[in-house]
Image (cartoon, rainbow, N blue to C red; front, side, top):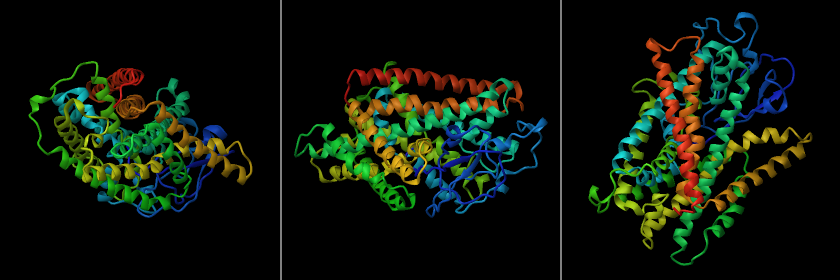
Length: 506
């Protein structure tokens, strides 16, 4: 998930018994921060932050009760009674509901980012034909996992009578209503999902920092030969200034400009890739087993848009159109898979074993058009950094602010936190100046956990009391996906770390 404006719905907690309250306008998407984890037990009542979200953005919907309020007493304590008459979509109050087309655009934007530019490098690690069919299979598996998460969300919303849930809440409630021995781990499950969302977004920020610096260096090397570290340090000050903007309404024009530059850059990159294509026999049809885990990491990094799926579905005017064979989700992911496959196939075929961590780095030096592509993509990713950064800073911010009492000290601590996190991503980029391996590492560690490991676990626990279908087909299917995700996690992480430690430049 990358270039979708990852807006977060912050959650503050007050102590005491949970109480009913009407739904108010929320700050937009992607996940909640677990302020309740820092300030009290899960019996705390969630109190949303009031704000005015920018027009045409997505607003995450939450129920009238807090997380703990769903756990009642007696037989209904864990939501196991019959909720078949409850329709969650009838209880959603949306300030700015999105149409099917709006949702499709947001879905495409959430899945297309720096990952698509790294697909030729992924094909190099897999081989032309393994990459071709592997990318389509990976896209199908990731899309199915998205459907699994939406299905579990619907089941849990109905079971606990809540209008909508985000990713971390789905994990929480699945454990709450699962086997008796797992219910004690419901808060832990929510924290794990939130932690990996944080790691994923911080990883994206590191990739963005490195991407901008490498593309600027590629342009400037025609005139001056300056080390990459200098460019990263030069970028630090403007990046900090941009990320001190806290109101997302002011970032809407920034997101629009970034989207336009990204589309233009991709179009010109395609034009370069399709010029004078060599024969398919000039590249490897199948790569070695040693580099295949690197392909897995890069591919799952590119497809990791599962964090935006529930907010998108929750904010649709007609959420029933999201799933289904010809629904918004399948339509968008088919487009995404086709784009990824095309960029990977033609990019690797064009540049072969010399392809780099981003296809923009392979464009010819000295030509005005190719230099414009690098500059436009660098500016687009620079402007998109602050939108990716919004997620991790709002996960940590409630915890930091909880240690201060006055408004002045809270605001100062929030400012220091933003400066510290931006500096942290810059330092990580300096320590690991290899774009290809760091993309693969982020994908193998965090993206595979969210996209391939968490959904089957959540589905197995959610439907524990319902059943897994004839011959337990759902259980066997979930086990296969889980094993696939775990293997990718282990071997992808190992291969990425090995390449980083060997100092391979890319």
